[in-house]
Amino acid sequence: MNLDIVKSAVLGLVVGDALGVPAEFMNREELTKSPIVEMRGYGTHSQPAGTWSDDSSMMLCLLKSLSKALDYQDIMSRFLRWAEQGYMTAHGEVFDMGISTRKALVKFSEGTPPLECGGTDIYDNGNGSLMRILPLSLWIHGSIGANRPYNGKAYQVIHNVSALTHAHPISLISCGIYCSTANELICGRNASSDIQNGIEAAKNYYRSLPEFSGYLHEFERVDAHILQSLPNENISSSGFVIHTLEAALWCLLRSNDYRSCLLEAVNLGEDTDTVGAVAGGLAGLKYGWQKIPSEWLNSIAKLDKILSLCEAFSVSI
Image (cartoon, rainbow, N blue to C red; front, side):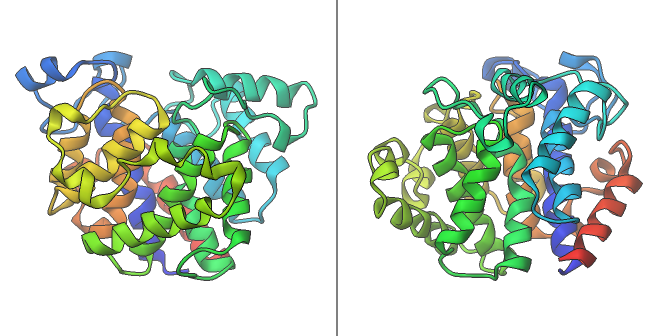
């Protein structure tokens, strides 16, 4: 697969994550008074500038696993290694982990099969699978094909990878819409109308399936036309998966470059690292990794290792 596309997705996500780490849990009012304008250090988690969080760690675990094969046992084993040993972390330590992810990894460590680990309760709809799912769009593009729209096989794989930690239909649909939108960008279709095509293609798929169609009313605002019309105060940046999806798409649709998209994302406050990561992956694909501000990119911890992972993935797909 084209290395530049892989780097654009991966670096876009990691930089967005790191940009948001120091401001996580800060509210919008605080950030209005002292906005993020550059890569900061310390802050919420007392980490040096360029430190990425669990979002990037789990994404890189998935990227590494997919460079070998699609193997759910291997993906979960890497997630567990991250949680227990600091594998694929910026500085050898885990300083953030979602509740649903933690519960799923405990189940897996106790012998539950990978695809039965994810929570299915309505309260298991944090953004923990959405934040890491982007490499799967790259894998689908290279392994299944750049279908427009995705076929059922592609959605089933997306659902399975989400369900490792988050198995409720709302999380599955969120990941499906995100990956379908990412596929438009991977294919070079990056106008607002293309983004809407990606969203609508996924929704059309879910409308055809009774087990998902009943949840689509929750995604009414996940629409390019609606999101573009909403003011800042109508966008939530909480950890609820639909809020994160809406916020990331809103930032993407109202920006003209990577920098402005990501500053918009992290200054929404609350779950800043994940909104930054989810928006950053899409913005990286839209604008290309070369458009990521060099001072942000060069501050990223273990950048050489991340680039090596991108290269290994690109030649394997």
